Length: 284
Length: 195
Image 1 (spheres, rainbow over the protein chains, first blue to last red):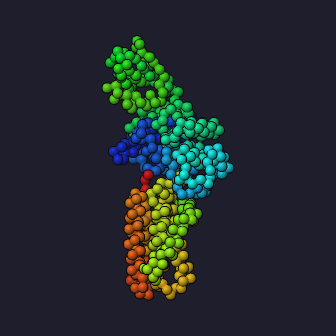
Image 2 (tube, rainbow over the protein chains, first blue to last red; image 1 turned 45 degrees about the vertical axis):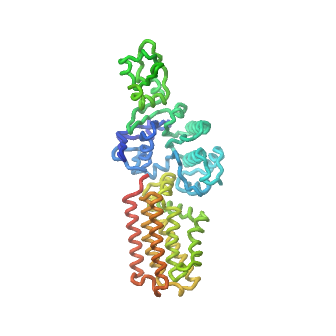
Image 3 (tube, rainbow over the protein chains, first blue to last red; image 1 turned 30 degrees about the vertical axis):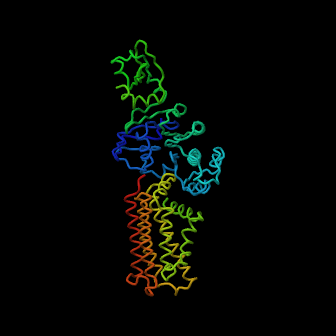
């Protein structure tokens, strides 16, 4: 399977934070959810991919090419949607697009206008009057109108209402069905990924916790629940993280566990993220 | 790609009537004020335009937009911004020459446009570099301070004699300005902004 994005042993140290030995790969034609709590290193990793920051060590290949040596060529084939897209605020959508489109060799104006209609964006509206959701839609229209093969989205759903979040995810699924695109979707709202992601890469405190396909992730991990007396020391050692209350406990295991009175369930991505990052503290 | 960035910046400026008016028309209104209507007006015009251009386009927010929303390298953006500012200063020098021809060249100090152009190139290099490295608020304050100092200096040169800055030759002003601009460009490329 061809990898559209391949990151190996990436390292970046700055301001007391270290992104340490980051490695993962995104195969062509798939959506990867890039999850982790706030401040875990998601945006830093994406900035490194876009060469907005320089790595201390490691390699990044996009479309099989070095991301620094072939930066211009690579950026022609990438669409980027930021959490807070920044444009020239005093311009209208039409004028802003008029500035951006000449930079892309494969700009498709009619496709762009289709997206504007579909997203119900008025080309004469000033950028500064756009809501967060409209800005994200506009960023997406731009990203999808120059034949991008890889969409990189940094927290695109953060701060959006559930209706628009759902609409955005439907758009992404539609794009994936029509073309051989790949998407790297960074978010801390893991429920968004339950619907759309094929692969999950989980980063915490600058380190990759896991990177694998979503189905095997769900098969591998087990949510274990039990009463107050069911949490033995042996069971506790088998759990990645556990929360204990007066009514019982809930924990995550990376393999099926056995025990009388235990209830085993399929964890959500949120469960997996929670118990990896916070479970130890709660279970201590 | 740097040329595309330069053209993009010029198109943005030319397409924004309010910025154009504030940048290029206001200095002519200043001619109604004492000090601004002297024989050094072309130099005041160039200094004011540099300030106007800087405060509208060359700060860190604009850089963020430039390198995140356009498929360019940071290097392309840096070179494009320097070129844009230089072209705008050259255009302003031509505007100053046109104004002098209309108003009567005798009313203005000799050598004023080429010398102001040289100093303007140096200044624009300095301000563009500051915009790359400093936080937007700091860069704005610093640029305003620099331009106010320069404006005051130029205003005090008015009617001091027939020649603008007689101790500076035209070739030295132009070569010094170009050298300074290239120096700041080189520094900008060696220490590009990181977002």
